[in-house]
Each structure stands twice: as structure tokens, then as C-alpha cells.
Length: 407
Image 1 (cartoon, rainbow, N blue to C red):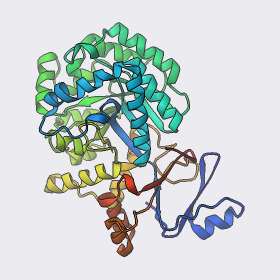
Image 2 (cartoon, rainbow, N blue to C red; image 1 turned 135 degrees about the vertical axis):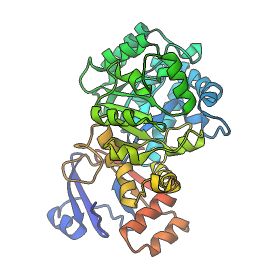
Image 3 (cartoon, rainbow, N blue to C red; image 1 turned 60 degrees about the vertical axis):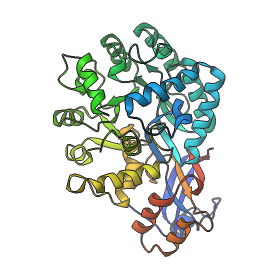
Image 4 (cartoon, rainbow, N blue to C red; image 1 turned 180 degrees about the vertical axis):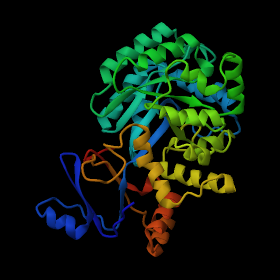
């Protein structure tokens, strides 16, 4: 990691052309327009690898574990997105909320309704964010309003792929909700769909809670573990991102690594629902790609900095079983790790020449605790540590994607 106390980034036609000490960058681009933000901190744009856009309005439903929370809180709210006008309102609020928190790239768990999914892609395109998402499909185990046949799911998904995949900064992600709510026929259809168009992502949930894992065993008696319910249908590969994996078996971790799949670590949600503590060390030792996800609405907000702090705290509580995450590692998890998980390392995740000019400018609010801490911070680690501990939405003053201000 490089850091400059008096640094500058130069960009042209949406691409970074130089990053380094101010004097050097300025002398190389003497005629460039200059934004003087010497009282602020510039970081790469944040990457959120797991967040549910239909759930933005139900953050904070306390006292429930996963399956009860889904049935009583999340699923009824998601059913409301059958109303296109309501879905458009939620999509706009969600996308602008990402931008206000400095997130420039996101893998978004979408809606069960085509109109709502169109609304999300439309809002992301209008605001200018880099988003991958897809129609969420299920055919059992939820509520009737959210269930469709495999044939209908594939037909609707193909229409969305034709309209949105590869348009602007958008990509499509094949999204079976989780094995609990998907028949073998639907999972098979998702696997075929994922291989039908170049560049499609795959995302779902994996090993979030012990109760969920027990349900999967009952529904798929032939499967040796949860991951096999996806493997059998060609849903595990280098373009796959699975959320949680809290209760991962040793074999599952090895197979995730072997397939090149990534895991979205969602520490706030894991704590909020009492799901458990993520075994980060086992995943890293096996060389599984791990990035951060806010997992709203079981997560507690759209801020990736807050998610990094929670990841740090949980790993500290695990003691020798955890990973002591320093500020530089947290910044990697919030940026470059997410880019890697989404196959975008050659596009985003760092302030390097040639990459897209995606970045976030942070400034402590006047009179804030963050301002007081930054005033006495005498190292890069101290400044980064302060940002993860204290910087939230009110500290984000400008966000750019491909050089353009978003929000």
C-alpha cells in the first residue's frame, strides 16, 4: 500500500493517469484543472459484495434469528416491490444511499420482480454506479408472492440480461436466493443460465446459520454439505460470490478455493442475527478470496467503513482463531478484495494508473470526534484506523465513478 501525505491523483477520460506526491503529479500535468482538498483524505471507491436492495427499509428489526427474520420482516417487505412505483422509490433511495456512503461498486442481491429489477438497474445507471445484480429466483419455501416456476424464472432472467448486461457500468448476476428456497430443477436452470452468456456472475447464500444448514440437509439428502447443492448444478466457479459461509466445513473451504469462488463476509449481519463468527483465518489459509458485504437489511447500514470495523472487532474476539486485521488489510477488504471477488481488479479497487477513476473523498465534519482524532494522528495507520472507527456517511464529501461525480 502506498500513501502520500500531500498527494494527488490525475485522471483523464475516466481513467487514472498518475498518482503520487502533489509536486510530481502537478509538474507532469501543469494545465490540468485542480481541486484543492488538502483537508480531506482520498481513497479508492468502496466495493460492497453483498447487499439486498429491497430490504433498505427494514434495517433495525431486533431480536430475531435468520429464518424468523426472513418470514416476519424481510419477505413481506420484498413482496411490496411488486408495486412498480414503490420499487422505483426503493431503488432510487438504495442507489443514492450507496453513493452517500462512498460505495462505487456493488454486487446487489436484487428483487423477485422484473419491474423492480428494471428499476434498480435504471437507478444505478442514472446515478452512475458500477452495479452487478439480477432477478432473485425461488420456487419453494418462501411466500407465494415470491415464488415462480423454473421456466418463468429463466424467461424473465433472459429478458433482463438482454436489456441490462454489459450496458453502461452494469452486469447481470444469476441469483438463486438460497438452496432452501430452490428446487433441484430451478438450481439446474440457474446453472445453465449462468453458462449461457459471457461475463455473468453468480451469487447466493451459503452456510449462514446452523438452522439453515439443517434445512438444506433435509431438502437435499444426497448432498454431503451445503456447497454441493450448488456444485452439482455448475454454480460454483471463478465468477461466483457466496455470502456469509460462517459455518463452513473444511472440505467446503478447500473446494471454494479450488473453484476460484469468492466469499462476501458480512460481519454486522452475522452479529445482528446471531449467525456466528466468520472463520476468516481458515478461508485465507485456503486462499479463498474474501471481501466485505453490508448485507442490508440484516446488516446495520450501507457503510463499508463500518463493516470493516465490525470485521476487525469480531476477529479480535476470536483471539488466536481470528486474524488481527490492521488498517491496511481493512482498506484492502473494502476496496481491492471486492474488486478481485467481482473480477474487476483490472478496472477498480486502487488508485493506480490505468484503472477507472473511482474514488471517495472523506473529510471529518467540523467539531467531530473524527476531526479531533485525525488532528493528532501521526501515521497512515493511525489515520486509516480513525476512518474505520469513526467515519460514516456524514464524512463522505465527494464520490466519483470513472471520473464523474455521482450521487
